[in-house]
Image (cartoon, rainbow, N blue to C red; front, top):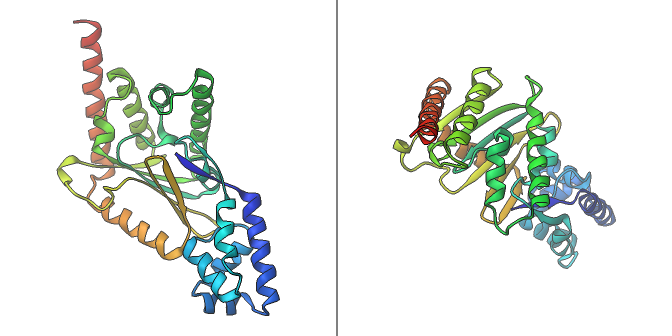
Length: 279
């Protein structure tokens, strides 16, 4: 599950911060020094482009003497919970110029084929009606439209070998899915790297991670776990996530070797599917 961001509340949050900062007679630079935050981060919060984390809100309350107002306001920035297509990050995904994702068990959403995504949603919990499942499926497939432009965004897919080996929907579905990823890699639309089982422990064992860069906004990270998802915007935290990703990428196979592995595993699935139809 992901948290859907509430842009309107984010704008109101920023307006209230600016009003209280000005009432206190502080410039953005002065507030940034007292609250131990960057001036740029404060500017983005006031413009409604970014949201503070809990520590940010606590420091703002302390400096501005607002008795916990900014901490209490934080839940209003969140909308409803939505399914695993992480709609909370959808707004950012559509603006990103670079997207780097790590997938521990499932193919990343923007790379999923229709049969693969269908199986994922059909097995999700709580159970969904056919109409609910089809709506989620349509949304997921629409996201893949960002790959229609060859140049933007630049996409990196770091896949644990478990993504290739976990059979979702049967060998025929897996064969089609892995060949779809390989085709995107062969056409140089995406860069693919597989973390083989032989690597053992690595820095991204804890779960899914998506990193995004933008032309005019600070980069963000999105981390997802069971029934939870969080957009991370604090610059120091985002940099740490980027470093963690880079360390894991260093343990992965090269793009060319990853494509070879994808094709090989897809061929194994094809043979398995043929044996099932012609025992």
